[in-house]
Length: 327
Ligand SMILES: NC(=O)c1ccc[n+]([C@@H]2O[C@H](COP(=O)([O-])OP(=O)(O)OC[C@H]3O[C@@H](n4cnc5c(N)ncnc54)[C@H](OP(=O)(O)O)[C@@H]3O)[C@@H](O)[C@H]2O)c1
Image (tube, rainbow, N blue to C red; front, side):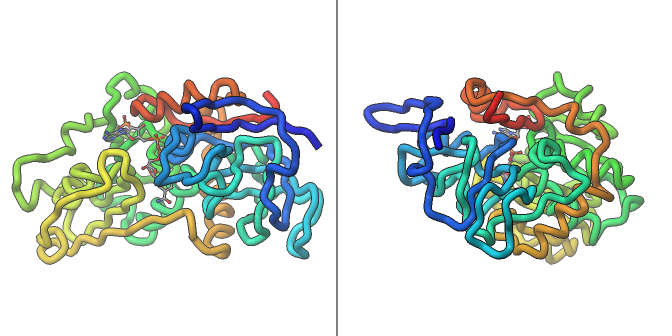
């Protein structure tokens, strides 16, 4: 079987090429899947740039998620024809990833694609949407829609934009914080009540606590923006943390926690267990489904992946982008 995949080489220099390869390139795992769609995520941009913190060995095929149809299975859990989703674990990191027409993965990495979700829709959400939904779950479980505004940072990014759209659907008043003033219309279009500029939530005053603006915060960027969010959340508010685009380190004091009872929730989509995965995909496909969201998603072929990756690395990427390996 011959098929196309995006290959990243580091020797003698960084080369990204679309290559025709065969199944000997695929790892020997239980389930062979025909990929219908993958999606672009921040980690793909790092892996496709030779970042050894994400992918140690090259040549490599990135793509940390995929939705497709099972072709062959050695596992009793899956059979040919099943519609499935794979996100997280090691896909696209040190395991041959979703920027390919086929992947071969361990059966336990796979989740059934809910019947009411088509495979394209599944990747419109993808890893970023799944992570957004895990973050929204913490807000829904702990903050009522009438408690006040919810701040979402990295608002025009993949995780941020899906989080805004789901929260708005659930009746929350959402404020999107962004470094891109030109996308205010986009943010309002997906459900944000208002936009604020990133600088307004990046406090360098040294004060231990700030005006309590937010009932909850979904932070996707980390660094001083996360530290500022902790200082400016209301009494007993909830803050989620999933990303490190701004910085992987942040400095805080104990005061948001011991004077205001703030809770900080860590969000991990990579090793999240199978039961939680099915529950969250079920919500995405049903009660949390965002009508028309897939219309706001850009669909590209392998030949456009590098341009989009450059936008991600420069912080200019907008919303969600899906990759169709046969486009
Ligand atoms: N924990 C998990 O399981 C998990 C899963 C998926 C993703 N993540 C992480 O979540 C983060 C966001 O992922 P994503 O897919 O949404 O990425 P993305 O689509 O590239 O979006 C990131 C957004 O962050 C903002 N941003 C960019 N550079 C920034 C900077 N220097 N300072 C502050 N904000 C900046 C930009 O939005 P604005 O211009 O609108 O501010 C950008 O669009 C990444 O760190 C990713 O690794 C974690």
